[in-house]
Length: 169
Image (tube, rainbow, N blue to C red; front, side, top):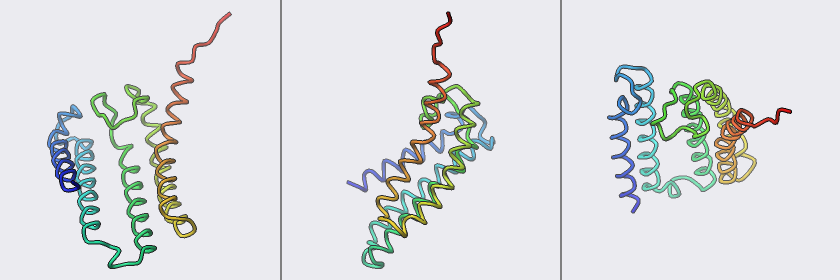
């Protein structure tokens, strides 16, 4: 069943990579299209690489503790890479990966994505450090939750303040 999911993932990623200029509404030589395509290719490499690593069976090569540290380092690298690439992308209404609270507001998107980039480096580095002191699976779960929750919370608070109805007497 995993092979079917991997084939679907690779197929959809290749289609997205080919249709990136049309999806973004930009020319194919635009740097933002190149960044979007590069993100798709890196995502494919990580997806296929993780499938191959799981197929090889790292438990036979390394101990369980070393495997956990390797997975934390890979996860932290992904977080730092994608967090750094996000501010380079523009927000568009036809990109489904963006947060719905930031749709159509370029200023808040830029602020949130910059904060997301800084947060990504902090979370990636602290994930590696904390995995030596605590259970690696718990560290990955908590750090990934924080990685998604804080920018979403920022956008939610911004828009709740922006659209708050004030009673004028």
